[in-house]
Amino acid sequence: MRIVFFGSPGSGKGTQANELATGYSLTHVSTGELFRAKVLDSTRIGRRIGDTIAAGSLVDDITANYVLFKAIEGLNRFLVDGYPRNVAQARMFDVHLDNMGTKLTCALFLDVPIEVAEERLILRRTQRHDKVENYRRADDAPAVIHHRFDVYRKQTKPLIQYYSDRIIKVDGTGSPTEVTHKIVKALRKWE
Ligand code: AMP
Image (cartoon, rainbow, N blue to C red; front, side, top):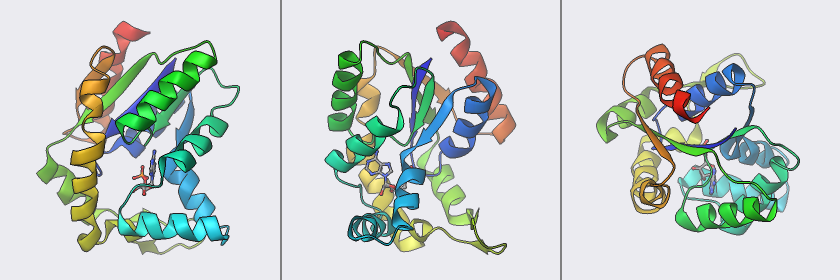
């Protein structure tokens, strides 16, 4: 099973991706997590990625493709969360998988109304990996949220059309458990 998982910021894809990866024994690859780890390196490229994330913009396609392709090397069962973020990445991913003699099983889209997603983002706190205190992700700052939605609408949403032949749309409203049930039900026909 090879799945890409996408949705707007605040759609809950990170939470759901964790659940599904565990439930289906898939390797969970989150490009957001991979990039946040690179920021901690304090290298020139790490700082550049950190600035891009903090601004709510997308890391360039060459870097995103490179990081993702390396992360899935040798894997046959994976769930990718946060990639592709635009149609150019999706095309490159299809070409890459084709060269590897494989293809995606499906693209899972978590559908959440923008107002609900925005509200969730504003409230979101994540646990810092090295500290006990709660903190707000830099890109969850109210000023950046607006830009992230703009990027989503212009660049990521067109993936719905691109993946129209293999998309599974799931209503992402409700409690995390309810959403997981809906996804599992929707995935049954692709297993
Ligand atoms: P996420 O955790 O998926 O919300 O990603 C956090 C940030 O990492 C995004 O706002 C982008 O700046 C960057 N990012 C993650 N995945 C990608 C990608 N596939 N292409 C470009 N930038 C990405």
